[in-house]
Length: 97
Image (cartoon, rainbow, N blue to C red):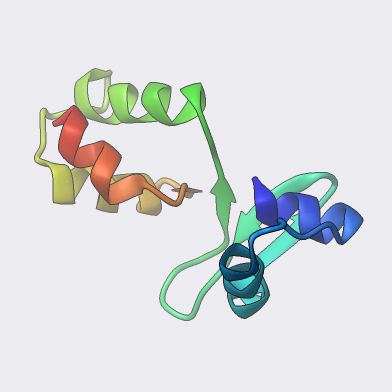
């Protein structure tokens, strides 16, 4: 997570395009006790996830006790309502559903 690394240590990636994107979007992210959170105007504060955690969250929301085998758009919206966020959420939910 490059945003977490920049907020913690102020280290930017070497590629100028990625560094510019991080600086541009940095106002949406907050680091609290070492955890990265994302906030915006239309939703509450969301916990940023990555890697295997995302797959587990999608599986639980899609197939678990609260699951209803929903489509990809509904799955990503349900993950946001549950308080989670990751940058490739829409694409991952489309592949999963």
